[in-house]
Image 1 (tube, one colour):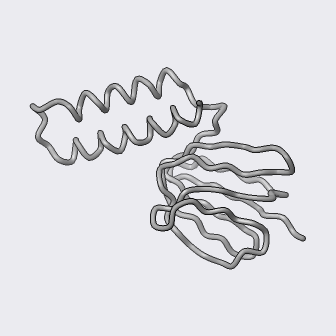
Image 2 (cartoon, rainbow, N blue to C red):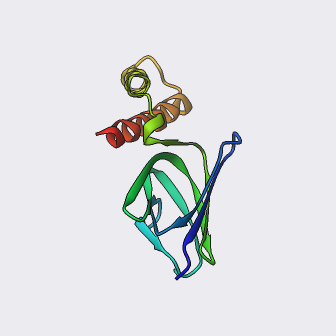
Length: 135
């Protein structure tokens, strides 16, 4: 059976590719947790802020994502993500600081700008996702 080829691209130009992948797992915004195996039917879906992983033999490689989309067709998994970080790249101190900064903005009753609050909620979700991946 053929293996999966994974491509990950971000809007800021960060790229990653790997092949000989047995399984890919991520969280979809509209469906929930999804697992891809070689030979799966083609589909496209949105990726939620979450952590994902892929497996090559017994090795599990974990990443934090901040959302995007995935296209799976003919054992090629193309992910177009806002950002991604491998677990080994995550700076825990920075993630904790981003969480605290976002909470301060969310809890600050003097800030009434809905766009600023929405960005803070998104930043909080990303920070918590990265912190949880490290646990």
